[in-house]
Length: 139
Image (tube, rainbow, N blue to C red):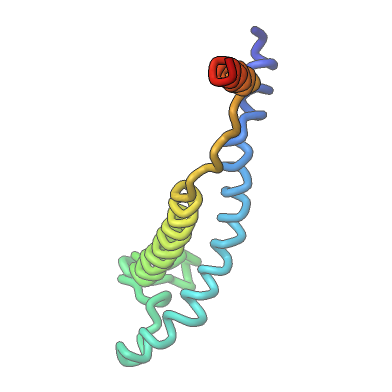
């Protein structure tokens, strides 16, 4: 089997395509969550904490020097806090989506399948049995 054929078979699997769609949707969903965190969630949290803007929180290790044109060296832990909150929101949303999908799958699995009709062999045997029963009852 050639490498190309193996690769084609790998890509053609449904799971790989589903994963690719998930990655693309996840990328777009990330922008929504970023906006949700920075524009909706963080302002009330900042207000509750006395107006602190988490994204600007940092520990300056070395201040910027305009004379030597060196940039500031800082640990931006506020950005880290924002990213942790974004992660928790994404994880919660994905958890709820998976939970909803699993409950839908359980409902679909709980429905009993419709009883299958007799196979042609069973129908023929039933007909033969009925004919033999009628012959012995009449005869």
